[in-house]
Image (cartoon, rainbow over all chains, first blue to last red; front, side, top):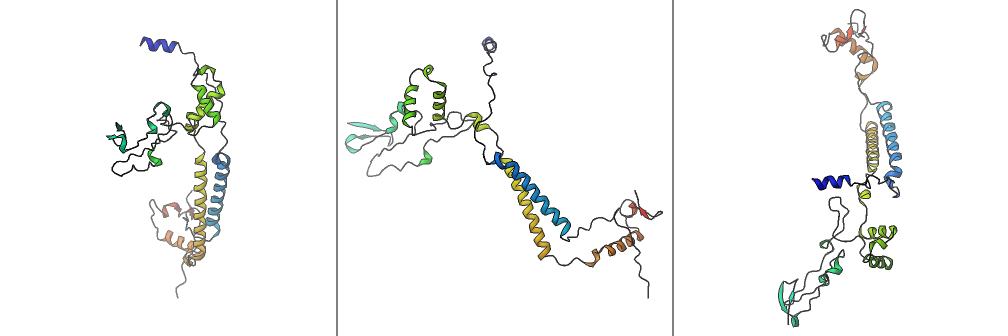
Length: 78
Length: 189
């Protein structure tokens, strides 16, 4: 215990003085193009699905509540 | 004269074999690959060829800080002379030389091997791209597979259908018709 305390007191802070320099390694593929690819992918996805959902004529049969006004339906009986 | 062959693990007379163990030069072997090219002939059988994957390998792993072998196996003349200098007093080495020695022994530093990568960005981009491709697939399906939309989904038909549902009082308590204000003939706010 005493030895531990001695070592702790002896700490000159050399480890604490380690300066953060950041990596000097050249950027890899993901660092160079990652953000661009993500944005591009998102744009492509939203564009395609936006078109598919609205312009292709697919019927979604959404709920009429609050949207559709009713219309008389009875045909005159012969 | 009898010699003990470490590979065959037996006593074989020298006249019967020639056993060379390069690896037995232990001191020179620190950090180098143990390429045992011994051919112990015993009854005409040889030793199996040493495969690359059986030899000690180099890994940059956090949990195994000191790999079995040095990273650089074949030293250039500059590196070899540096290794000789390393045998002397280390205080005589400059900082660059120390780093060069480190890079001979190791491939990536701990900081380098532990650093996080930006790979997730490419992965997410790939996800979006494949989702977009799926959308194109659905588009093709709509155009070439689906038949015409039934007349029961025309806007006018749906309006009439709605009136009929309200006339029937469908789900009047909590469901469909509960949303319709029959007094004022409008949807409840």
